[in-house]
Length: 405
Image (cartoon, rainbow, N blue to C red; front, top):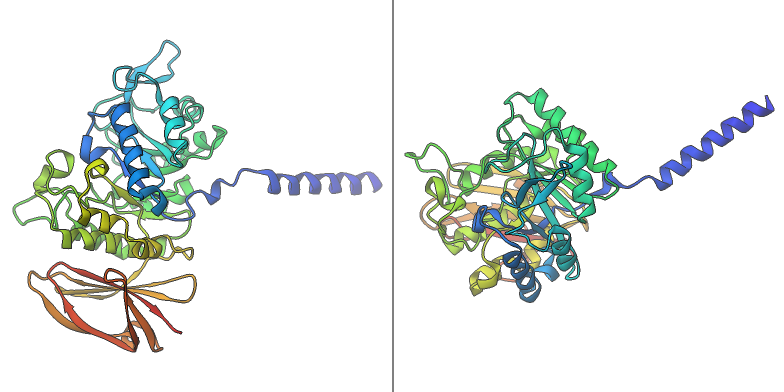
């Protein structure tokens, strides 16, 4: 009896020690990741010089201070495998290697992301990770990688295979000895919001690739606009929270119709008002905020949109709630997002092609009190009220923070 008692105490001690000492992978991405990604601007024509310049510009422009703390290298960095089957970077694009690049951006307070695919080849036809998950994860860890975007081109269409392949890479990342945020990118076709967190993902794409346009035109069979993506992602608020985010793809703010990936499929560019709407709506939906413009050459409008700290605070709020769409019709969409300190964020979108005047009754949205209403784009308080009335420009989104006292 005495030996059994001591053995049970020993088991309890080691169990508690395990709980205290195990890596906190479940706590990865407690807020939606923010950063900059190479794909929309560079496609696969990337190199270490350009990425270092982007890191410099992120630091100099105030983006890092504002919360954009990742640089993600998308497809096109790969140079095949060496004679031990270790994945290697293209020596012409990255002559110093990925580890040196990671060290460079880490010194600026920026984390480094990288890209692979759950098949033998990536979307752009480069070396991918199927069958080499543990080996590649260890390589990424040795390079001090902080984030992996894992695509699904050239893979079978069924959900069962996707779950197996994504879990295999997630398990490999856990075994790598480094905390690496795992971004699942199968474009929402297998409803990842139902299974991706259990497979080990911290965020998952919910839609096809975003294009630099407001919405898909009737003549276009592919290429998602801001509104097309909104209408998918807005319905998934129940599945988001700290460490598990719906990802409606990258920001197209500041691209202005640039040729390349975001310009394919009818991506002819958006107005600054429409870019404000994407920033507003993505922030309300607790979406990752991943810029893709040329940070080295931003105009003032783009800076003002990407660096709006009051709107970013809505996105990064510690409660981690995705806004619910309370009103939805062909003209008006109204969203409500509860915040950690008891405030609420309310967004009012005019989807029509002409300016419209409306009145929003807060009680009809489930908000019972009189609130101090602050416009987060005008950076101005409007005093206490139980409603808001005003004009919203075509394709504009107003964002308000409501405070009880």
